[in-house]
Image (cartoon, rainbow, N blue to C red; front, side):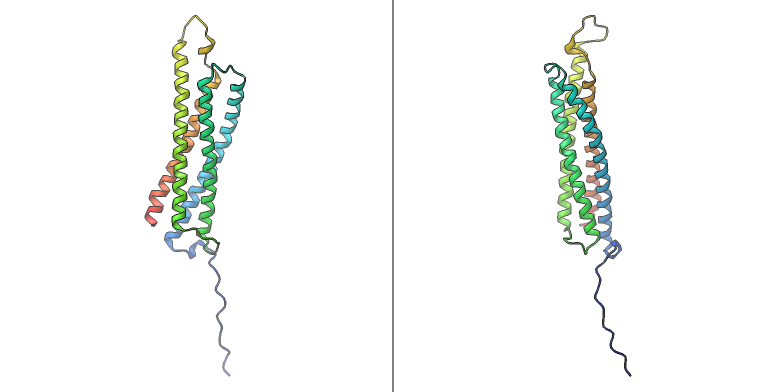
Length: 202
């Protein structure tokens, strides 16, 4: 007696990244690693900088407005650079989600390579803009600090409240410099991802 014919069962979608082509798997892993490093790095930097910004704004509000004009402008650039850090955090989170969808093709919608390249390029541009703002704020606060130092040299007998150095003067340099360093690290990471991974896989 002949056995009944064997009917093929339904095919299951791939559930592992190893079911992907090697090039797609390599791109997905690289995007995931850079995205996670950028997300947590920017998040930690944002947590530290928001505390320093709060202290600087409080110190600015209880000080004389005429003496802290340039420091106030430096705080404005620090806030603008901090906003770009928040935007970089959101873009890094979106890249992590795109890498997960790319590694698991059964998850819909599957991102296209052009969409991922555009998102990485956008994050690179955000980091570049944030770096420029942070460097400008650092230069502005450093020039203000240098001007106060030159107008009140060491050993001067006269006391001038307009030229005294305060914690706020140094704090704004640290804030803008820290934000610029954060954006520089993101710029280097996304530049490497764009040139070494996405360009070779295209």
